[in-house]
Length: 266
Ligand code: G3P
Image 1 (cartoon, rainbow, N blue to C red):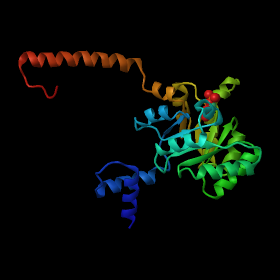
Image 2: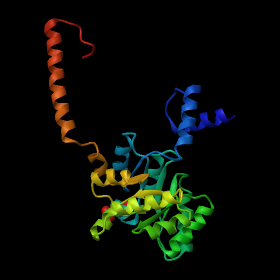
Image 3: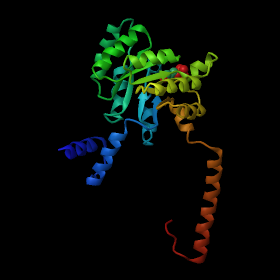
Image 4: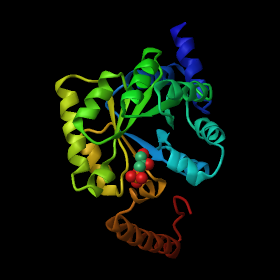
């Protein structure tokens, strides 16, 4: 029975036709372990084509959106969210931000977004009304991302309101002359002292250095614009080393040819 359930979950999330008992065991282990320990990379974008390109690498775990990114996309936000959600499995996270002056307004909008896909996470601002909405959603087991976090105090309130994620805005802290990565470190330390299971989702990142530092200081998730994700691959020594390897490999092939030895492959 449990075997069949896990098997169905696996088939719903993978295109692979290889589904023997050992794969089910491995997948069960992965499901159980997915509640901690993993560094997750999200894309901060509402551009479906850009998201698709990055998702094709197999390294993207979710997406965060906000009203400014929706404005940039210039399309119906619901339609954009539907397309993004379809790129991910049921257990990933796509943040859809609600707006409004009252918790009731936010909850109305959240009701609509929740219908889109089970992988929707509702994003609310760290305000009195936003945290009221957060608590109500968390009560119903709806994952909530509390955004616009600029202090440990705000992160404490968000955790108490039952947030699954808190989003400190690293770059905007730096823009205002205090350290964003130090804020990540302080929140991580506070959560760790009190065994809080809210995940730190570092946002508003401006470069690859921020990505590494945020993970190093305790962020479980880091969200970034696609252009920063692609830059994570880059290193001048990798580029130079590869150029040398390619050059040498060409020489190996030429030398095999000269000796008339059958190459392993061409
Ligand atoms: O996820 C929050 C992010 O979109 C804000 O980034 O660069 O506008 O500070 P930024």
